[in-house]
Image (tube, rainbow, N blue to C red; front, side):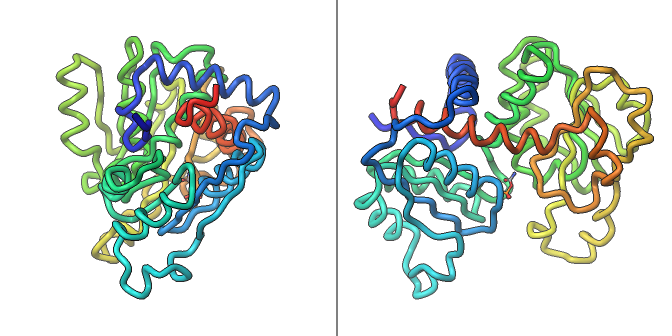
Length: 302
Ligand code: CP
């Protein structure tokens, strides 16, 4: 049976840990010819810099070839071809499909249609499981553990798919504590909070971005997702609501790291970049190794 990665919950905790180990191996030795003779389709129906380029780098470092598009405007979707037919066709051409799509559920649908494995590179406001695996790898590298992590998620927790996947993954580990900092209109959706409640996992909600962050092991900043708002006036009201500045990090824990899936707009001031607690650019580099690991695991190459 083919292995897809559509939601982070498709993989078990053991699989997360296996991917962490593989990522660590790939970090030491990124160039391995595991995909020699294989073709990977990279289908991006929505803009991307990191996810697409780190996937394509990972595929190249594994010796594979890439087909696909970064702009759906250059595909036959503009002529009215359905996602069903596009995926049916591409799964005749490639050995693996990596797909980003603006519609929630599009990746699951693609996996049902495709005869080859599908990796979800982000579907609307729903899931971003490969980002989560690189986030876990970044947390493990910087904290030495995935247990007992006190994480502050800040910003757009409603539309931010990265925080949805990360919450589900960290819930598999021992004793996580979640602190959600968001304005009322961008709070973490009830379905995720209900799942935490059912598991007896502690979470706290705040609207103020204050010195409460001094308790954090991880501060996970997110961009307000302009493209998901139906009303631009609502976006204008919250677009700069939280800005992390270097001065705010003074009394934070020595081990704390600032993560951000990127791109950032204004939510992390550039004066944070030189602080040793800033980890977002290293986090993005970890994406190469994590994605090599995800490909190797999904395609049973290791
Ligand atoms: N983190 C992330 O998904 O970035 P891109 O949108 O640039 O791929």
